[in-house]
Image (tube, rainbow, N blue to C red; front, side):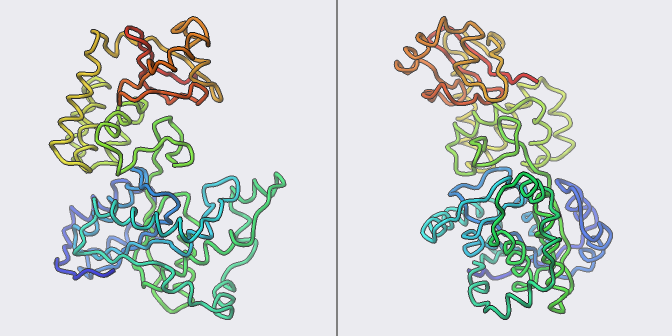
Amino acid sequence: MFFKTKASVSADPEKIETLLTRSVVEIIPSDESLRKLLLSGERLRIKLGIDPTSPNIHIGRAVALLKLRDFQNLGHTVVFIIGDATGVIGDTSDKESERPMLSRADVEKNLTEYVSQAKKILDPNLLEVRRNSEWLLKLDYSAIGDQADAFSVADFISRDNIKRRLDGGKRVSLREVLYPLMQGYDSVAIKADVELGGTDQRFNLLAGRVLQGKAGQPPQHIVMSELILGTDGRKMSSSWGNTINLNDAPQDMFGKVMSIPDSLIETYFVHCTRVSLNVVKNILTKSPRDSKFDLALEIVRMYHGDIESKKAGERFVSVFSKGEISEEDATPALFSEGQTYADALVHAGLVASRTELRRLVSAGAVTSVATGKVIADMNNEPVEGEILRIGKRRIAKMIKSK
């Protein structure tokens, strides 16, 4: 899918400096070389590839999408690659085990959702949406062998997570070895000038530079962004259920943001929004609850608009006001790694026994204050910072022990 480019390219030094610093961990080969390229006024092709491994894009992944939009705001063209071929293989850059292979049907289903969600952030006038099956499925054995010759087995197995798996006697499949090669070839196919990705993608991103050099193309610049922690303080991942998704309902999105640990408020403001950093600095002088409330309003506004954001904020306040219970009245319910809601609530004395808790759950009387939804499974590990209403008068705040 291609869109006509309309905007002119801006070489505004101040805007370029912000682009190079906000939400950026590292630039390869250097900040200065990319700055020089951006100041030239040349229209660049900025690449981001996402495998449709689930139907949702979460705000952790949206960090890169926001950076793509920063490039678009300067007039550069974004090439958003949907990994319908690589998604079947599965990337294990951030995994300690093999990723299950997806069926073609799953990939196609997720693909449609991905594009729709990405357009909540990206400007369609400066956007190309491509499937990497366009070129990867056309490669024959000879071409794959030629590309693979640029890498050694040692290059692959020296990666930390692969080395740990091998040292632990875990299986590493040959299809995993192919993944960085395929992602790297994407850069050759679309002639990328810049590729974005998380720090966990370093090896794959560098593969693009290697293969572009082999193909006689200028090696792409690499812009690596911050990895965002989820609502439970771990890396945001669909596998752990700690995500805030772009297609979450406004009230759910608001509640999830309000449940994040206080330590993540500034991180979310800086990397998951485009609120001016000076404004962020002022917001952070407020109490953590008020700062988080402003954050939730902004994130919901970004994906659902002003009206829905305001309504979600009002509903959140009204839920806390019911029964004259406030967050300050919440009883801390401590839990450790591997412990459950039931463990924490019984230990905190918020319920007399597991039997009472089961009765309350059966009656739908254990709910999330943020979303109003019933918490049905007390055997799950709690979410750090989550506020629960238990019956009419009891309120608990889930706190993970350090």
